[in-house]
Amino acid sequence: MVVKLRRPILVGGLALSFSLWILQSWYDSIVQVGEFSLLSLLVISGGLWLWKRKHPQLDDVTDTLPSDRQTVENAISKAEVIINRLEQEVDNPVDESYLASVKEQIPQLRADLDRQNINLAVTGGKSVGKTTLIGALEGKWQQHSSKQVTFQETQPLFAQASTTSDTAILDNANAADYVLFLANGDLTDTELQTLQQLKAPQQRLMVVFNKQDQYLPDERASILQSLQQRVDWAVVAAAPSPLPIKVRKHNDDGSLQEWMEQPAPDIQQLTQQLGEIIAQGGQQLVWATTMRKAVLLQTEAKDSLNGIRRNRACPIVEQYQWIAAAAAFANPIPALDIVATAAISGQMVVDLGGIYQQKFSLEQGKTVAGEMGGLMLKLGLVELSTKAITTVLKTNTITFVAGGLVEGLSAAYLTRLAGLSLVEYFQEQEIALDTSEGLNIDRLRQTLQNVFEQNQKIGFMQSFVKQGVNRLLPEASGKEIIAVENAVG
Image 1 (tube, rainbow, N blue to C red):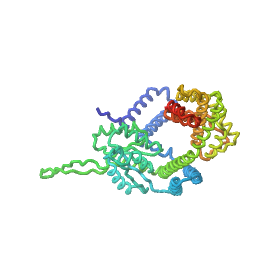
Image 2: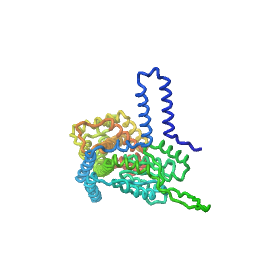
Image 3: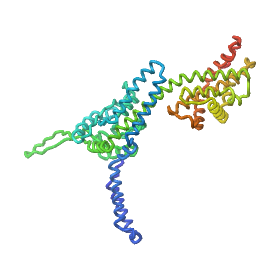
Image 4: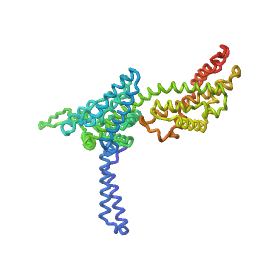
């Protein structure tokens, strides 16, 4: 059963008729308001409603775009700051090669700010008519628009035999200033998810119901209405290469001639809306593309810098975790006191802060260590860690060292949690963060919980305990070592 589209004129007419009936019924009560003023308001409201139906989401295209050049320049400068920091800390040929490639992108981004040409990507599944639509648009655009637009066809999405992944195709589309997403009917769930992926990086796009001529009029209306209800973006229908129609001519002599005639492309609504979008916000579309590239460059450079810093931080965390383990193993203490003594070292905070350009004095480091210790106690991580280690070590063959061993391994494990949590916390911060405001306790609490969950896997716990036993019992007999290794799996 085909659902018929509600005609805007019909809906508007019914609404106006109902309003006039109300006006007549309540005339005596509202005469002071003024018949002309009320009727004018109804007419204006109806006109605005009809215009909005005819031009869906055009205002939204420019509302969320960068409104000024300075915003984009600030994003480029921010990426440049991170790249300069990366240049100071790079320490191997692989990173140097990457550094050279990202440095070249900064002047290109600044040059793109003045680009006049609009890049428009046409994407969609296989056989949706991308090539034909581009051909029709190029011919029409050159005739009626002074703005230069380059139409780029992507490889087909959802093609299992393709050597290019959908992610790569979407990345290619997101490099354009605007995207036309083609569909030959109502959207599938896969197509809808793909549209969400395109929208995620603040890409501007339009859904084109292509090849609409292949449906009956009622079916076209139903599909178009469904598309408009399911997506938040502009939706237009087009037929760049309509099906040929049969033409018949009756001659004066009574004979009949028939032939197939190719109708002109039906892309008027599409070109009109594209023209309005580019005229209203063409420069902002270019700025938005440059902004996306600058943010992506910033993220990539920060990830690379954090990778370098993490490689330096992990050995420091490992060093302090075994120092804490040795201290607790030699002088066993109650589990709840581990955090306040050996498990978290103020000096470790200082050393890790130095790697991430977070400057702490030793006194500040001790304060941070105390705050983290308090968080661990409140979150119950001390008790949970000790219980997990005791479970792994449960065996009668090593009872002679059970007490000290549990304390030592717990101290090492909690120190590791503290160190890795700081690393994760620092990585989330801005590169030039001012540490004078102190730590964000709520964010640090969440980071601690995340790191604890990541380091609670049984495989990791067994490996960690085995490594700790080998370190804390280096002079134990072979028989004892075998017994311990058997106990931890």
